[in-house]
Image (cartoon, rainbow, N blue to C red; front, side, top):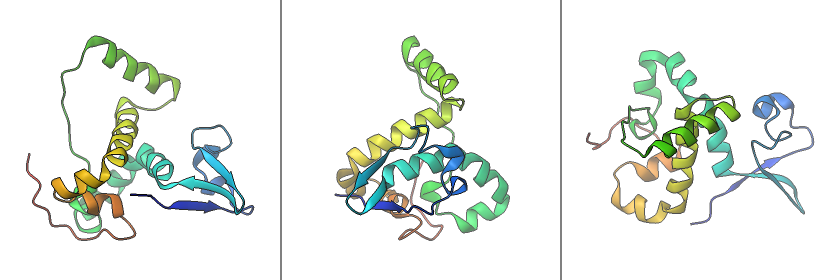
Length: 143
């Protein structure tokens, strides 16, 4: 499955690229014959870095406005010490949270296995398609 790319025009402002993230390399833009492009994966990763703030700001409206498949849930995992320290280091280096680092890495996994996961996981395709094609608040997601 090939994901679309998002066009960056010469008039795209710094406000449209979160904190100048393209200029500092946090968002990878590729030059094409049509101009600068950013992959959908990169844009999703940028959004996920501020997603918790957005969802919190929506409050109770998040349940109505956002598909259940993309709403935040708590995840607890037992990992080797070095992986925990790796996540902490990357979060400090990028001036973000462990949650944001892990979400970005999991988004890479989601994109790499998107076809298989779309068939196997209820709501997965909706989450990947949102906001263009994903809507609704129903889900058969379990624990």
